[in-house]
Length: 298
Ligand code: GUN
Image (tube, rainbow, N blue to C red; front, top):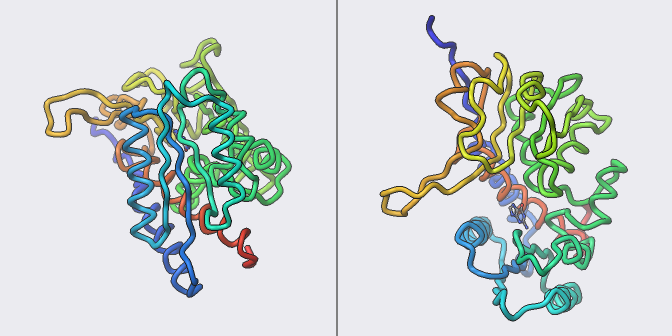
């Protein structure tokens, strides 16, 4: 049997459309100063260093300014990090604030996110923005979940009435994605199952998915046994696998691409799938933060 063609959902293409729109809008505004986002990073974890560098690079490409503050994990306390955030909250030259996760164990990421002023919370992880998301009120929507919805819109894949199974319950991906996809909206109205490390019979759950979202950081774990034909597979996993390439690693998603791609209807590649969307949505959120702070209509 000839395997049916599996459609690649090119997040990078969708991200470029969003970045072009954001850049065009920025240029039309003829601003006296560019929007500015502050990145706070604790330590030198390789993945975090490259994610923040990528966010800064894309920001500069489209005309958004950034500042980067790096802290020594052996020196900084939660209270001091929150102190830094409070001074950025008061700084009128800074529109958005992002604290790169993960943080060292001694610092509570949620406490830190809650210290960011809600109008500067471009990640949307603070209590006010997450609450507003659950209430279906305007606010900042976390970038990866918002990017996944943009990907579905671009490819005209409606989640309404479908069974979406999400393997992740974090504040960064699973919980806000479940809230977005269950909104009373044409790009919501899904039936959502949130799975996590205590879920029993995971393959039985994931095989029910019309849309399957994987974000558990287990490279190549999800093989043929976890998917049904016609599933739309969104792979949020991005794990570095050491190799002999010049950069020393390759990136691998949670899906075993070779095993599942002959079965599923469509799949996001890793890299080039969800990753670029997260960055693009951060740029859109930063423009929104600029408008909020500078009395432009949002
Ligand atoms: N770590 C992994 N993804 C993210 C993200 O979207 N935002 C932040 N702040 N940290 C992350």
